[in-house]
Image (cartoon, rainbow, N blue to C red):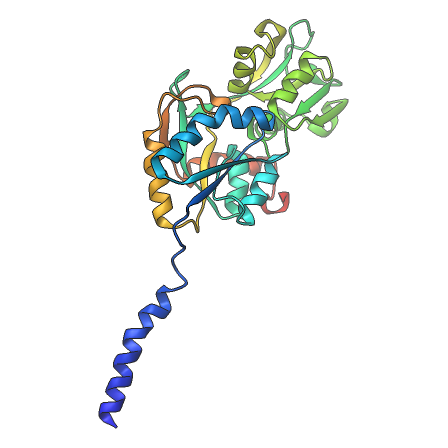
Amino acid sequence: MKRMSSLLSALCLAVLPLLVATPAQAEPKTTLTIGLIPSEDSQAMVESSKQVLESLHQQTGLTIKPFVATDYNGVIEALRSGKLDVAYLGPFSYALANQVADAEAFAVAVTKKNNSSAYHSLIIVRKESDISSLAQLKGHTFAFVDPSSTSGHLFPKAALQKAGYDTDKLFSRTVFSGSHDASILAVANKKVDAAAVADRILASAIARGVVKQDDFKVVWTSSPIPESPMVWRKDLDPATKEKLSKAFANIKDLPWGDQGMLAGFQPTNDAAYDIIRETAKVLELDLRKMK
């Protein structure tokens, strides 16, 4: 009996690690689906990201499939449901995805133009407009980008509230355009009097000849905002995470979405986006209720 008991104990000790380890590790992936925020129309976004995605394929050996949703929450929902492995998100949409989709920031772009991993929100009006200050926005029409857009909604809204303005009463009409390009064109084409947009996306639209710099003037500029991060699902397998970290670190001198030519990517982490959460508190936003 003692011998049988010893054999059973030994068998249990041998099998137990296998039982514990079996469900813990995800299988390494062969195809990676990457979500892109809709700062431009979907075709333009994929086209302007093509060289970076091709570099990822060449370095990792993974098949790369891009995905552009119709809005920010579409990318977040695809992450949450496991349809996306990696995504390029705005800072605020990342803070939301971190809470509701278990996403984690791991890399951030540094652009050649300003050699920085930060950008700014602008409030723009047409050049001939009589608006030259926040106070003069009263009674005018205004375009935000998306409820989850950092530079196209949250930062300018927080700045207006800090300055003492009630954004629900300040404007005669507000709209959500769906993309920064759409907001820029809405101002240019006199569909709205003013709009909040990212400085680098306005610069990109000017560089592409979509609009002219002389078409606009800036009436407000935000403090620096941490740049849009690359994020992955926390449950992505470690081998794929390691491949991606190395691949992004090697990417340089390529165009990337709305950010223009890259100096490279640098590592980042969740704590870098605490300023976004602090802005959400100013606006008394419950991130979990924004889905």
